[in-house]
Length: 237
Image (cartoon, rainbow, N blue to C red; front, side, top):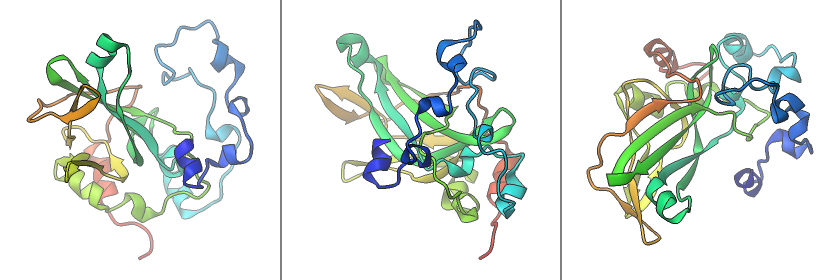
């Protein structure tokens, strides 16, 4: 929310003065007697765009994507992700440290549709690394949806098709990151600069082992067929 406010692009709902209870129900807040494994478990949450937006304009995008994409795929501006969450610091010092990254939105499957997602990387004892992708409906909603060219036939899609995507890298010792829409596809290497945390400083790990990859929150990667469709140019030139 702070990122959006500072950029003068506040979430459309918060800009209108809406609060949590405008979308989230008492059942979500206080429970219904069912022990859910996760808030992402199907049936755990009541809030969804269609509860208020029962009809949408008959645009070409809506006609093509209506039953295939969740609203957030096009209307979530960005997600905030945590990189290098350092478990040893949490265990030894009781302090949570990580590098927050934003300016990107991941796409994966959830509940029968393509939806927005985020990622999280972890560094644990002996510099072992983990990478998680999970569906995420960020509270960074924009009124206008994305253009075709924001998702289709992009350089990001081409990288993913080649089997390796550079997520973060170093330029003159400064951490840089990818931006925009990033498809999550199985068997693709999502390459990061992993860091150790020592004496209050982030130290790049040389030659880190490949991370253990996990798809969380009941999400699954896009299929090769879905990636193929993303690789096709769409819309007017």
